[in-house]
Length: 460
Ligand SMILES: *Cc1c(COP(=O)(O)O)cnc(C)c1O
Image 1 (cartoon, rainbow, N blue to C red):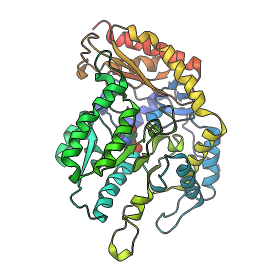
Image 2: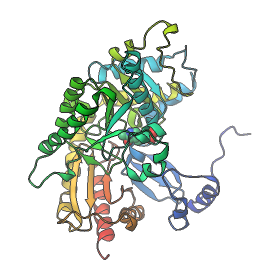
Image 3: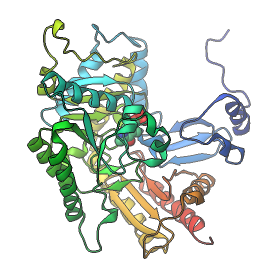
Image 4: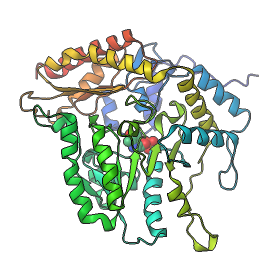
């Protein structure tokens, strides 16, 4: 008798996807599309490569929804998780603790912007956003500022799918239907530099957008708990980017008006923008920093909200004052996930990851230079290890393609036939690869993307 799990015998893409479509409901998907769009069952992953059940291989150019940092099944992270599996898989986190979470918290405090000394754990990014929103509100409540009940968010922002996180986001496609269920934030214009005037610098444009933010703060500061932002890149909002000067100014405005700053680094944290955390480029410490996605190297769900002693102290009192933060999730601080996170931080220490990323980022820029001259490319933009190519119907006026045409989907389909997983956001093709990608694999992606863009834009 074998105690090994049964392998998929004679499984093929077709057999697995047929079984899948009988019972599985996939995220962010119109399931009817799969009448004509094949589901891709992945059998295994190694480094930047994924392999399906028919033996086709794909470069994971989107790091499996931005979570993977050092490639799939990285042996070092895998062995850390395996060791932890035989020691302690999980334990209640109220009243109990364990070594991986203590170590992880110590290391995160050392790495994070100065002053973020307290770590509150959750399991997914959206939950971290909920925690930050509730904590900010509750801080003001505990300190007697009970009129503060609202949040300021940026146009085109994204903070997750749970109701609170969805409410402070601004991507219409995900939000519109649920509007009746959502609290109403105050929305400030995005510093997104796609809309800068011709000849205007990123910095000048982003700073100009601070004026509207300041006006909203001046008007609403008494009722506002916090401003929530995605530092430097609005990832789900089509990989739109802005200058760090915006964040520096925003920090000053928050201080002036007595408003918290929540930095949602769930997608941009852990080196994506060129620094370990995007906030470093603005030399700021937010009041709350949300981390998830890359935190475990893409192995397991884990999220953390880091905050200051000032916030922590406002909750610290006799039980009977009822000031405690009574929020919890079943899998909070899961030891397996923490062990993956510790191994991920080891990998950052063991080699000059950020330096290597600078070379890779420069190579991505070079490999995609020619897209700028494409008749249907409005912009090629880049921040660190994120590079985006925006396809438009009319280049001169930057008229977007009607969303119904699903131009990006054509790039996706083309890429799958040519060994690449590119998953455009609307008409924006982007690369956000694991950091172990090679120069030649970047060249391969650039070629596939070029042919895909040609196919998607030329000939109607
Ligand atoms: C992905 C994402 C979230 C939500 O994280 P989930 O783990 O998907 O819930 C929140 N904020 C940002 C900026 C994200 O990119």
